[in-house]
Amino acid sequence: MRALTPLEARVLGVLIEKQATVPDTYPLSLNALVAGCNQKTARWPVIEATDAEVQTAVDGLKALSLAFEGSGSRVVKYEQNMAAALRLPRQSVALLAVLMLRGPQTAAELRQNSERLHRFADISAVEGFLEELAAKDPPRVVKLHRAPGAREARWAHLLCGDVPLDSAGAPQRDLPDAAGVSSGELAALKAEQTRLAAEVAELKALVLRLAGELGVK
Image 1 (spheres, rainbow, N blue to C red):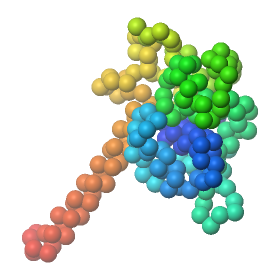
Image 2: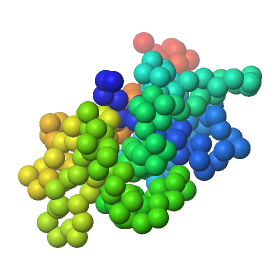
Image 3: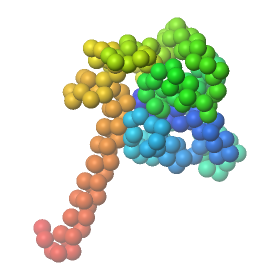
């Protein structure tokens, strides 16, 4: 399977999350997916993806058999198919979803943040499934080097490819150059660029309309 784009990973994570947390409204419409992708809480990074961008991501997931259109509704709705497509147990799917939605985390953080998706008995159970994911070919997660001053090492998913690391083994978040920007940050920057471009286009149209009304060339 090819590497996912950051937005494809976000959409897949949202589908997995909402299936467990709001089953009454699952499968999800495009509007619900966009809202889930752009949530301000329980997301890293926070993004502002458009309907068109999310639809493109959904189409990419469908091509990989990671998502499909649900039936029995007038509005097109989407479901995730990660467990079957990648042959993973639901525990592993839950951990990957949390990593896709929230970024790198320790095993303890993953246990806490995945509770609504799957309740792990203890941290060792989480670590067991993470180690299985890391041992797959290709590996689905990686254990990062422990950052200076940190008590525990964090884990990151590899569904979008390798994780850019700094010299301390931590995911790069604040470097200004493009080579040091993580895939998640690139998704946020692209979403912001799209939003700003739309605002500029609206302002240009407004200026042209006002100029026409005033007879200014």
